[in-house]
Amino acid sequence: MRSSPASACLPGPRRAALYLKIRDRESYEFAQASAAVALDLVEGVVREARIGLGGVATKPWRAHATEAVLTGQRLSEETARAAAKAAFREAMTHGENAFKPDFGRRTLVRALMQAATLEVQSHA
Image (cartoon, rainbow, N blue to C red; front, side, top):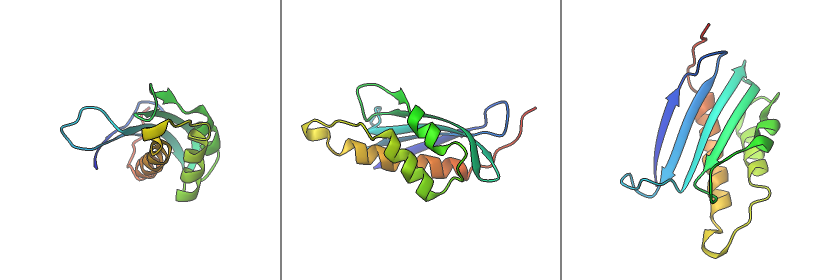
């Protein structure tokens, strides 16, 4: 599997943003799973999170339940896994796409952990 991370620093408070696209081959345009993550972190604690998920359903969606799980929590592998579990709690699979929820959870955990390590600058 190939992944193509991209990062950006958004205006406003200290925010780390990252888009992670997982695909079979670099030449493939469409993601098998993707996660767009924007985190407002204060000393490792999530003050605000915005998360969008794609490639694992018929259309991308904003993961409000996941954002709620993360807000106010110290970001760790454990909290990232709990947030990812919330994102796919109601996932329904059909035949050949049964792998998608687990694949989406792993993609989101990876994106959250990578975003947490980004060096961000404060914009005033």
